[in-house]
Image (cartoon, rainbow, N blue to C red):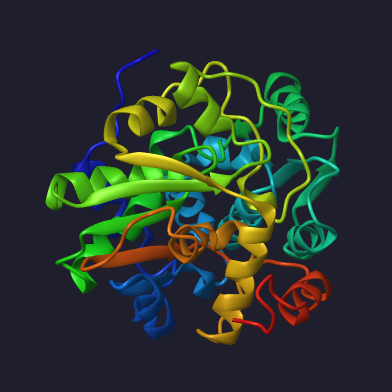
Length: 331
């Protein structure tokens, strides 16, 4: 495994590259979460990106670095949905052909959104790893350029710009809660936060079903994990047994990693909708779930939760938020 090559300088350079191409998202207080956990809790609203998720940052930074010859060849990626949408959006803006390979577990709404942007959306297999086989074939046989959903320095640096914005708006932050999947989001944010405010804790939160990075960190090396259906579908997929960057970043920079259950995710979706008046997908509210359950202590601290996306099937969302919570009425 190579030494991680993503630095604060890379993140700052990415901020300059993507300025004007992505939204500088606000960070807003959550009075309800603050009252529940005894801290000063804020939400970083990456759900307000044009594509509905943070992934546009890394995809834009990576595609902006393509040479003219690479742009002609086109790009390919594997995705659980949000990264593919970010790649498709950036590719359309730059006039670059794009192929997005996804598994049968990706919600139809995310697939349709990618096709609407003009990308070639291909459904292959029952996991992101199986979809990745088709992506690798496109590279080997068709000469396309791979845009990794997480394990790429330009992608990681692009996601890290969230950390820079967060510290600009909330410089006294003590705890940053970040959804954890392949590690590109939290790895980039941790690079920025640990460089500029090293005393702040960066904690990854992920779902119990198919938590690839969590299991890999526990094992001490990347391991394969079966991908399972989950409300946090955007956090699914493996980290790659040949992972070059994000595993090492997570192992080095994260203060803790924790799991939340499906019902805890559903409860966080309900709370975020009814109390904060925000639509969020399951993978976006795992930080809130950790606060609501008391799995992370926040009393007396300034806390930032990255609300990473809103790309949820609205029929499923309405069903979840109108379903009585475990304690009775929606909370």
